[in-house]
Length: 253
Image (cartoon, rainbow, N blue to C red):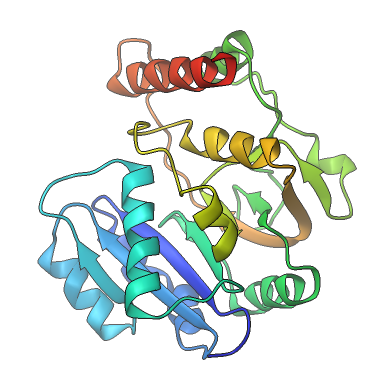
């Protein structure tokens, strides 16, 4: 394999149609320097067939697992089944992310030249790349976190003012790349986070080791995100609450 092989990690929770219709992902999977691995959290026969038809590696769970644990499982799969090297890259991508081959080549070029320990790119919420996804943010307090969740009042960076790659506090794991050796140094995601804040936590632990997320503003992708239930009575709210308390507790203690 070439130096800086790129392993794309995608966890599906019933996202068969997103993956099937993502022609750009299929094109990227044809590259010699890319391996796409999809973990099926629902053990779906239809997704297995889609992966077989599109040159994606397919693995599944017998029971549902959390986001961090699933991505750690994919990392171990890449390490054991593809001999992933220390200079290779492990890139976590949500199934609703669409990035074309030309933009992905920019990632390959950037990682080859700069060898970042971890990085993210510029996500947008529309196909015209006009509406920014607030995927890069400052480390939160309890108040700022829930202002963001409940009222969409962000503690995010102003992307309009960023024109060159910069170091940031943390980036959403909707798109988050790691040098594989550094992901190992971090021991991957903390699997005690079932859902939410595992990305804040892993970026904070990287920060403690003197490594920041490198945000690359000129590499663009579409985040075809579905609206989550922000009601305080929803299960998502309580998952958020439990996760942010764990993150802040880890930070203090």
